[in-house]
Amino acid sequence: MQNILFIVLGLTLLIAGGNWLLKSAVALSLRLNIPKIVIGMTIVSLATSAPELIVSIKAAMDGFPDLALGNVVGSNIANLGFVLAIILLLGSIDVKRSFYITDWPMMMLASLVFFGFIFFDGKLVRYEGIIMVVLLFLFLIYLLKFQKTAVVEEAHEDDIPLPLYKAVLFLGIGGASLWGGSELLVSGAVGMANHYGVSERVIGITVVSVGTSIPELAASIIAIIKKEKAISLGNLIGSNIFNLMAVLGITSIITPIEVMDQSLLSNDIFWMLGISFLIFPLVFFPKGLRLGWRDGLVLLVVYAVFIFFTIQ
View (cartoon, rainbow, N blue to C red):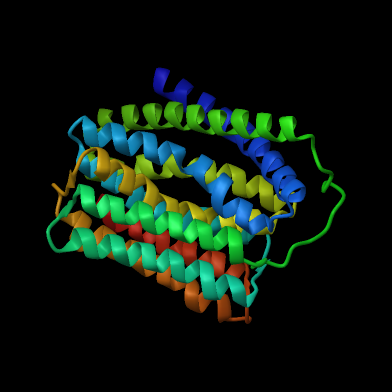
């Protein structure tokens, strides 16, 4: 009963937090004259990646490295295979070339750097974590200086600048609500999973990763309903980059991470690379530079197949 209560309270906080965070992101993008996709890929992504960071650091320090790794790898798969799929089923997203040239390649680069660091020796050590964090900072500097709008944005009546203190207040409350809601949701979900004797890796790659991806889902669905498509798409791409470069980078700086369950290297990491690459052709087919409901169905089916084979 307690686990169910945690899940319900967690979801409530996540939905409210997503709304507050979106208000802050829109206000900041208007006030600072920064493209919304940049705000989505930085501030919103950082706030919605906070649960992964907290969970991964705690898991690694408590001696559960597979939970830390499974959480991030699973979250990256869920962000594209589940969250983006739901968004696309709600409405299509028109994509400009700058998104395809800059943001998707950076996500793939982050995925390949992570793959190269962990695949051959099964470890993420301190100097590798430092390299990942430095790469993230370089990308953010480039993003803030040179990035142009990568998604066609729609003007609407909600674009009214908020006072700066209100924007910051919404950012703080929204981020805290997302973090608190994720903690409750993960606690309840892991409690239920443990009751059925599920392994640490499977908990990390499915239950915990989906739980910590709920902030992205909440923030992105609210964004898409309010027609903030640049924020919803940028948030997901940015979150995947943050999850790898910041979450695993910072975690491995604090304490080295070593793979215990080899399925993470022989199975899960290839699913993450595969679904990240899949966005490449989906942007062009069946209609050029657009992601639509058919693409959402493809991603959802791929994610369902991944979950099926993972829990077998």
